[in-house]
Length: 379
Image (cartoon, one colour):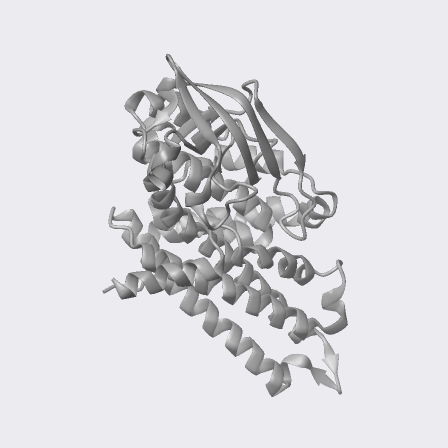
């Protein structure tokens, strides 16, 4: 048992950390204020190989391991969670399912552009009436000759309005319920893929999230991912992987909050001494640090298993659940330490506080994670 990172992981972390501090941090508040998509930053992430971090080099990726990918998400999230989720979604719910379930032709056709950052991808699962209940999807795909005709709608789609390729889950056989779901690789530039205006969100404001209306969208039959009826399997396997990435994002937010709290508490003078000299403040920092340490170990174990090809659904859910709730705790306590100044948009902790909130919701709510964990235990 080895609890030390490999040297290559340390070098990788430093590279991403330098980029996050020098390239992302200066404009993060302004992008948040104006809901400006970080196109330039995403292009640079592509140049660094981070838009296809764990995709093999033969398909245009960096060929790094899953741990390196999680490190990258974490370090980006410390400075700008919106950039981190844009990068994470491209990797984990678009590149990953194509790599894991796609034909060789599909991999060659789609992965090089996605992994290089030339184009961005996403995942169309959630619908207005089906969020946590993947079996309640209504979007239909009817085969006609050498193509499928899709109709329906998708909600809360990250990277919509800026993405090119999306893995989309739809019903090919409604009589079979969730066993009749299939997955498709969809081109957002196709007629019938209608992107609605971006949501005006509480946090992650520089990340684009939209509802999508699908009207007689034609998808070539060769864009079927896997086989008909494999949609739920593909979706669940993808979520098992992507939840670890959201855990890493939450971990980065939590670490960012702790760093801000330590810095502020060391500088702020009250009653003739720095805040950090007060035991009440020290206890808050200690609780934050302990939760961060525990979250990191969960994420790394889940990521290690995923990278070995032996993903563990329960552990992925545990990592996502604990890390996201740790992020909520740490941003809350960090803002509390800042006092009134923490309520001001001039301080980074205010943005981290808002950004943290969604981590307990997307990629499966905390309640869903607890259901997954409990079901695993009761088998």
